[in-house]
Image 1 (cartoon, helix red, strand yellow):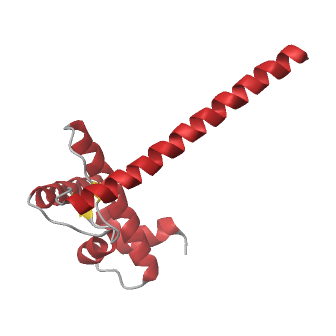
Image 2 (cartoon, helix red, strand yellow):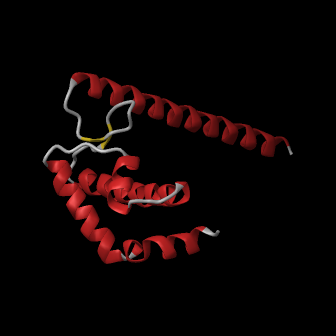
Length: 133
């Protein structure tokens, strides 16, 4: 079964803009009160999937909501995301969670820096090659 067909048949209204805005607003207020959640647990609570395909689709929708929340909180200079190895989403509350997020972000920055340096080196090689031609 195609993904589009599956989502329309199973979730219908849940894919609409109004439902998503309402769900994101509810999720935001719950997070501000200190709630933690995983994608799977929230997908099961909201959509009540009957099989693995429906669960996968529900998790995909919840992931989009989380991305929207990350952008909202980032506008206010508040960090929101996965805070531990269990992939629970929320705000950082302990030093252990801070260390986990800090290490993960450091690895990401290191990767970006390495990629930038590689691209810069490739550009230099290309310019030298063009001069030789």
